[in-house]
Length: 266
Image (cartoon, rainbow, N blue to C red; front, side, top):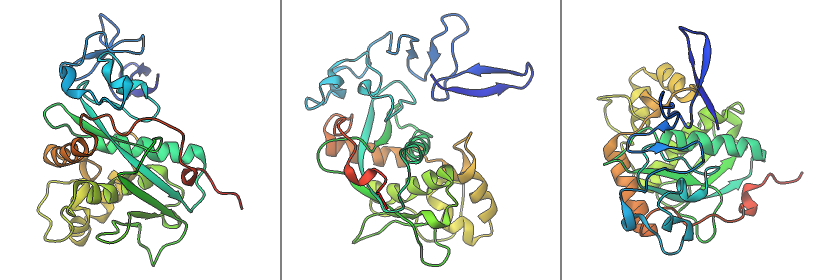
C-alpha cells in the first residue's frame, strides 16, 4: 500500500492507493468505476467481462484481479480495462534497479493521467516476447537536449546526463518520447502553441516562452497535470494501438526483467 496526500487541515497523512482515497464507510479505495479492496483484489468483477481477456495471459481470465496480479508493474486508474505496452530498455546510463522502478512509476503515472471511455494504458519493463518499443537511456547528450523520439528510423532515447538523476523529470520525458512512437504518427511535434497544456505540446510551449512551466510540471512528483498530462483523445489512440498489438489488453505478460534493463557492470 502506498501513501499519498497530506490533509493540511488536520495535519495527518491520509492513506491512498495509486492516488485513490479510501471510502469512509467501507475503507475500500474509490476508483472511477469500481472500489478496490484491502484484500488486494476487486470486490466486483470487471464490467468489460470476457472482452478484456487475453488468452495468452492466464491472469486476465480472473475478472477480480488487479492489473493481472502484477501491481509492481502497472496501475489501473479507473477499475476497467488496462492495456499494457511492453517496453524494452537499453540501460546504457547504468541506472540502478531502484531508479528504473521510479522511472517506470512516473511513466505510468503520466499515462494514467487520462482515460478514454474508462479505459487506460500502462507500460511495463518486465515481460516476455517482443517489445512494443525500446527506450534507450543514454549517459550523454548532444548539447542540452533531454530526449528524442527517434522518429522515424530509431528508438526513443532520453539523455540521462542532462536530467540530473531526476527520475520524475526523466520519467515524464520518457513518457513524452514513448507516446510519440506508440501512438504514431508523431503527435504535435511542431506548430504554434494553442494550449491547453499537454505532455505532447511542450515543444510549442517552450518556443512560446513557457519553458519554466513545462519544467515545473515535468518535475512535480506529486501531480501529473498541465504539461505532464495526456488528453482522452491521446489515450484513445494509445489504447487502440495497444489493443491491436495485444488483442484484449494486458500487455505481453510478466516475465523476467530483460538483461538490458539491469545496470551494467563497469
